[in-house]
Length: 298
Image: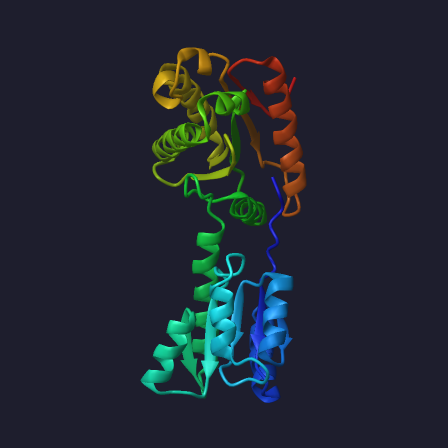
């Protein structure tokens, strides 16, 4: 698992020093890292260099105006998902429509209430992060969202069980049946894991997709053994349904599950949790057969 970069970065593209200072102070007090751009050209450079969570964009700026900045970002495959909040003195309906048509995701006019502004910023970042941190194959939370969720649980101090679910020899299986059909298998497996985790936890389980055939499920500690056993049972009983193709293509596949509890880990225990899961998964994979290994190993 990769550690999420939890500090949220915002590029503030505003040539008015007083407004830029007010915005940066308000957002800085809320825990955001603000990067100042004095004109449209610098705004483009900062977005491309820092991949911010949000761009706050004035319309009337030197060199390149805000409308053109928005158009260029939304036309760029790398930066089109960067959310844009236009903040401008141009208050007519036509101005708002022009800004939204250029690519802004939201439009606010000056003067503005700082509380409403801060709430709008937080809402936009939450919505965008939910979409950016999803695995495109399964639409489940991806690696950054998984890391963030685990770190929040560790800070809360409530012990949970973390299940790492993987499929042995999946890469060779994918090579034999092709990318499209293997993606169908991943989606089918994701649905089984999600459905069973919801049943085991009465709807409160967290399930994420690290990539490939790797998944993470988080449940209450006492629910983990039941969920792991049920997933292994379904993987064996629904092999043909989950993994399409000639039986020879899937005969070597084996679902393995490593389980580790956060019990005893403090707020900074993210790396230790990763080591627990990693050691348990190595033991499970070395065995070469479907099964479940729970921390501590041995």
